[in-house]
Image 1 (tube, rainbow, N blue to C red):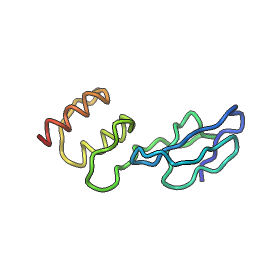
Image 2: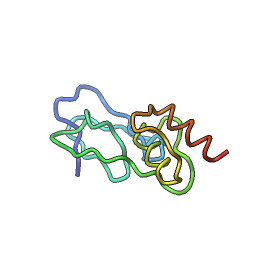
Image 3: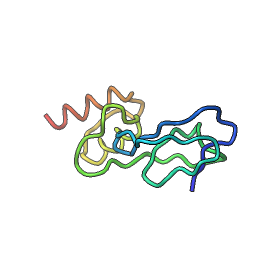
Image 4: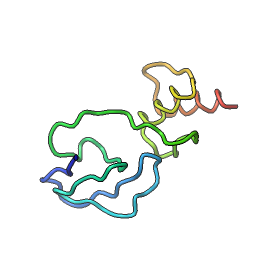
Length: 98
């Protein structure tokens, strides 16, 4: 299980993979529960980066990461350039589902 890095000063207010606030905070040394998303820069040690897979068939929340939007676009078959920004991917998803 991933942990919040030990040298972090302050707290982290995490979100679920769907972009919903988790309703609690994490501080240095805390375990990151399954289903909770925090930036890799907040984690202790080398943690492989994997795009979060959106749950269900609903589009991710607007605060979701670029990787989450890319995973959703791939899931529904929306085409976008490899170097597309989060905004570009969201636009491709909207065009694909319109």
